[in-house]
Length: 78
Image 1 (cartoon, rainbow, N blue to C red):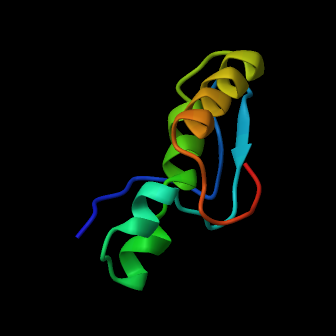
Image 2 (tube, rainbow, N blue to C red):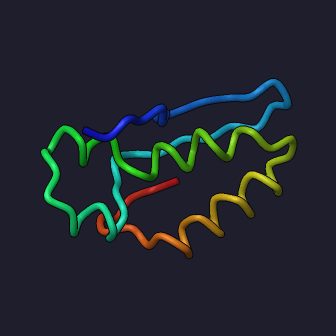
């Protein structure tokens, strides 16, 4: 199974907030995974990782670069 530490919503100590809905990348979609593992998703991990940045601009640039590198298979928000 996949290990995930992703989040749906969060706020870091610098005041940067992130929120997302369910979503997984095209790469994950191609793999034979259980529905539970797909629900762990990539978008939630990108949201969590973005909160490691000190500014909203840095967080947004990080998230955008990850989404470009790993396009999502499902529509949604981040």
